[in-house]
Each structure stands twice: as structure tokens, then as C-alpha cells.
Length: 194
Image 1 (cartoon, one colour):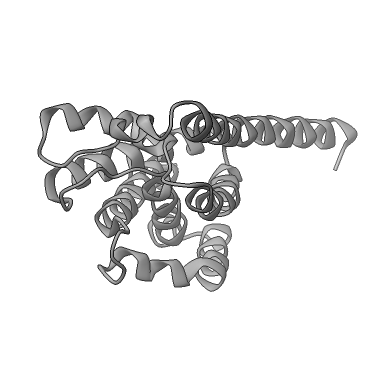
Image 2 (cartoon, one colour):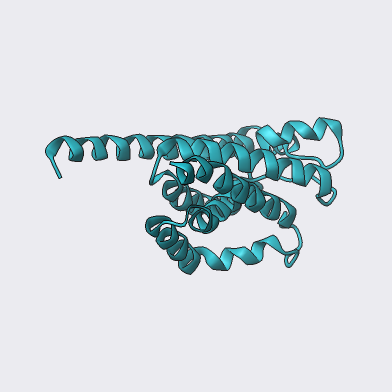
């Protein structure tokens, strides 16, 4: 590997760190402001199923969390799986994030339990769906290997798509996962035709 290639990889890694760090910083700053200054009043901007005003939550819900514990639980897999989505191309992260947020958000709005749904976990499940199914759709060694590695280390998350725990938006997890699968299919098509 030439020094130019090494520098390009280092630059790309720094860009990826800035993107992930930027998202995480926004999550944490908003949560601190929401708890300390606004006394939890931002949470109303989450997804409210079958309520027209609740549609705004598709945009805002991923940035809002119920508590610091909720945010911590989402931060680690967001960074880890988000970075794995970026491995081949950094732009994949933005595409998968947008598709997962929209499909997950619309799914929650249409089928979710009553209440306000918040958190970035639907997007995290989108990353999981993307990473697990990318190998299937692309059918090349590196994608299949990455799918297997993600399956081994994060496959246990899949139980989150089932209604096993009260107060957890399993609908957001399931629909976000399906959004990630859709993104895997959409992003793999051009690569398979080449």
C-alpha cells in the first residue's frame, strides 16, 4: 500500500469519525438541554401514531431520547453499526440512515402503539438489517463475511423486533430493520450489475 493510499484511508477514517461524532454530539447536547433546561418538553416532538402532528416525529424522533440510560443504550450500537455501514462507502451511511428513519418512522406512525415514540434505535435496527442482508444481496466474499461478523456480535439484537418488553417501540425496531433491508437491496443493485 502506497503512502498516498494510506493517507486517503486516514482521511476517510477522520471523516467517518467526524460524521459519527457529530451525530452523537447532537444526541447528547439535545438530551442535556431537554433534561436540564426544558424539563423533558422536547419529547413531544416524537412520533405520535396516526396523528397528523405526529408525522413531524419522523424527522425529530431519532434525535430525542427518554433518558440518559436510553441514550447510552443507543449510542454504542449507533457508532459501531454506523461505522460498519460506512466501511465500503461513507455515503452509504447517509442513505441507510435516511431510508431507515423514513421507513421506520412511517411504520411506527401507521402501526405503532399509542403514545410518543422517540429514540434512534429504529435507525440502529436499520443498520443491523442493512449489514445482515447486504451479503445476501451482493453475494461477494467481503459483504458475506461482514454480514456473518455482524450476525455473531449483534445478532441478539434481532429479538428487539418482537413485542417482548413493555415501553420499548418494537414497531420502530421492526420497521427500521425493514428499512435497512430495503436499503441493502437498493444499494446492492448497481454493484451487482457492474
